[in-house]
Amino acid sequence: MVESTPHEKQDVTLNATIALVDRLENCVNAHQIYTRRPDTYPFDIVAGEMLAKAFSICRAAILLIQCGYPDEAFGLCRSLYECSTYLRYITRDSEKRDELSRKFIRFGETSKALWFNLQSSNSTLTEGQKEANNRYKDENSIPADSSVSFRDWHEVLQLIRSVSHDPHPIDAPDSTQTLRDKLRAIAYTDSSYYVHCSQPGLNSHSFDWKEAIQIKHPYTPST
Image (cartoon, rainbow, N blue to C red):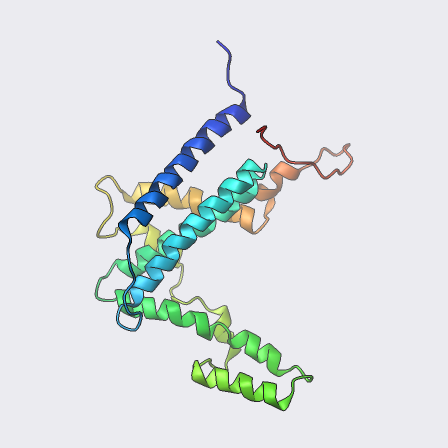
């Protein structure tokens, strides 16, 4: 019996993942889900954006793996876990769902305060440009305090930990606190090492003390 190589095993797993993503994507598209008025049903917009973003992240991670960058793909998957956690937080209390959705959407505007603050210090702006900037800020209620750009939209301490740890109304019957904590450890905590480039995320690029530093080309699967 010929034993499969690690790369061949990876290809089998990757192909199964691609097939799953394809099936899920086709299922979503086949249902033809339409969003309703955002002023009345803000969650429709958030859910639709998150869903589309999740598939985009999946496709990007798959491409990274196919091109020989599994570490970078793993780091990117942290964003996929964040998408699911934000939706979990917004939907765990149906009475607060729209309020939290509006808060999430609103951060898209308030987060621009930093850039308007930086731009206002640009001495090359004409009076017309300054007036246009101020008009946009007023129309979109962008705060003068740029520090809001550095705050999380949810303003909850350790949101990822608490939301992933606590149960949700539509959790599967076999979803336990221990299982959820393990999932967070892999999908968020461990993947964060590859996002922030701490030592665990650099192990694939380590060198022996006698070895010259060389930029190595990634493994590229044969086509």
